[in-house]
Image (cartoon, rainbow, N blue to C red; front, top):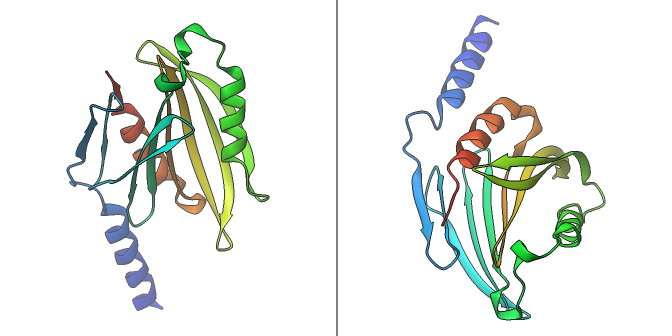
Length: 173
């Protein structure tokens, strides 16, 4: 019994300490006019969907997934500073909740560095376990930015700590 408790305490201590002291990596894209930080090297991918240039960034660690999608609508003539973005937002929100087990937990307007954006929190099942995701949407000039972090719901405190670090590292040029 004592060995089991000791093992659990050591395991928890080691796991809880993961990521602490790790220097986060700066990610910068001149193409997408964005900077942010993640705890390691991101995977980048670019594509073109019906004239919209899309740049995706993704990073996974032991417990969480970080993602940024920057969509450039300049080639199709859309400037979000001159239009009502509600329809685009609703479409992107529904795209995030496309699986049958996705549940929207909350939705709010947020202010970030003199910009208004939207944030949703949702859960979904991944291999039978519940995961929580936070996703923010920003409409800036010709760009739509989707910034997300997710992880196991049972590890909510770790997710919230990384969420704040990740979201607060965002810089738009």
